[in-house]
Image 1 (cartoon, helix red, strand yellow):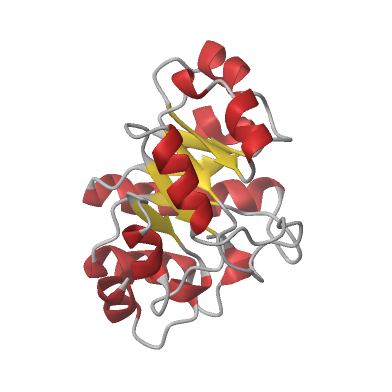
Image 2 (cartoon, rainbow, N blue to C red):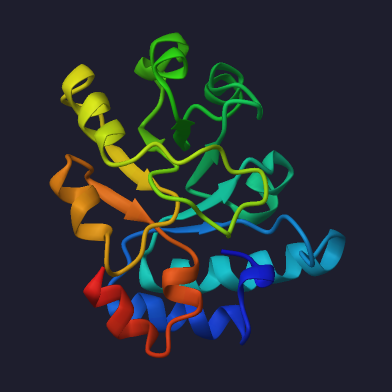
Length: 193
């Protein structure tokens, strides 16, 4: 998440999500109403500190300018972002995730150098303006059959009602934004996920 996804303080949302049991956090400050420059870096540092205090891995979303100032644990990129080959060269010790949404991307991506893939969007999502067409849980099944050992995180439109379908299809985890940021009780939403 980023500030643009939050109606209250992002730091408080992250703290509540940690209480609920999240296992990783991705700082995704982009899109309409997102922070830029110093304000973005300041928020990133606050969120990073919360993750460090709770030993939660801290990822950024394709903004490589934040890698060093935020001392990130990992970076997640899409097909049109910095290539994972370049990222692995620049940051050999970071965890690297890559979004994959179709068979062409699956078979043309250097999956041997990524730590996990983000498969989706599984369902339609409002959290990302440029999201691709939803591919359904069958996509998770397809990827799992092709790469049985590769960690898969389901992405896109996942909420407390459909997260179990994604896991049952073979994903190792799910990535959500509004299912947590818009929840009345964040810790309970995380537990439900």
